[in-house]
Length: 113
Length: 114
Image (tube, rainbow over all chains, first blue to last red; front, side):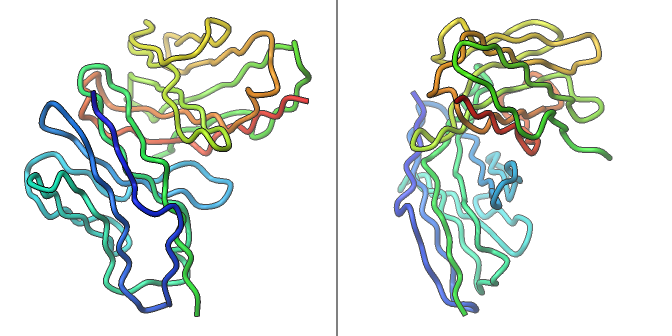
């Protein structure tokens, strides 16, 4: 069965610093992986999606993620944090034919001046 | 292009009542999904509808049910409300039945059970 673990429920960075949000997955089949962002009192917005076409995936708002099969990881990075990046970030894996997304517990990113 | 829309934005009910939540998918999308985001429990898959049929359901009791209409919009019904049903209910849609298709989420309905 697929599962997702996000290390660190809270991450705090300075504006302009590197953002690194960690995600490890478990999957018995080649995974399809997603990162979503949730701003306060809003739904989920897709940041990026891995579908095996390329291991480095570029998303919106300057975010990217690298798929590492050997480490079963799909960490999200952004070179320079902006105040507007403050939100909760969710990593998810698709449960194949059952069409459900399995989410990690989420990481709340705080960006301070 | 309009995104996934949900109504109402907020819903307040008392224990034992029934709640009905509505979702309109992105135009052209045939699959609709429902997720519950409860405090401390994270995002949990509830239901998946495609072409008017329930295709999969998560680990929720039968008092959570729904349907999909011919125009692909969907309704989630929660009967005999309990306090722990208080949560943000998110609807998502995707283009087709493929499990790899991206799910696009609506803004959610916040259900409060008093």
